Image (cartoon, rainbow, N blue to C red; front, side):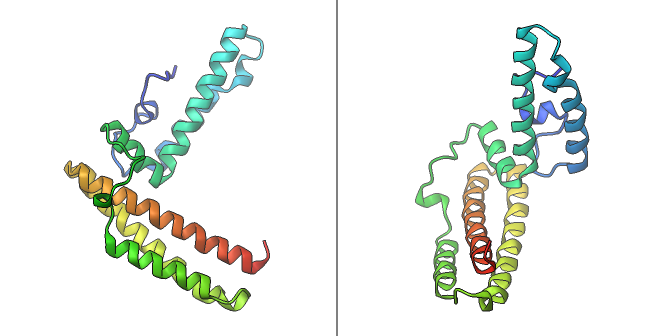
Length: 177
């Protein structure tokens, strides 16, 4: 039976690395879902029902965290006792920040109709490419134990995710969603 004392990687029988086997994560999640789903305890005591809800909630949080590369990176840093909620100037690459400011300005200057969609799509592909590069760097630096560099890359990934969201919002706005 699972326990909330286990970290998320232990819960899914995975090594605490950035690169994980997504299929193994999904398979183990389904197994644990079957074991902990509150419906299985519907005829149990109130204590059993409450415990099932708690375990299922923990399981869902763990799964969502490990499924998302950004959340997984942050979780790995937290396991190393790294404070990720506070960002200082040393945590950021100024060139990346300048580039993002320029991209945000470019988004704001685009027409408000669907004629902007090709440019938004190009920007989106560029950001996704940069995100993939940052994920690779994070995996490499975290594995190498250069946690300070991994933290900086994590914060850069956060900025790229925010920029990606803004691009997608721009696309949705222009598509009338």
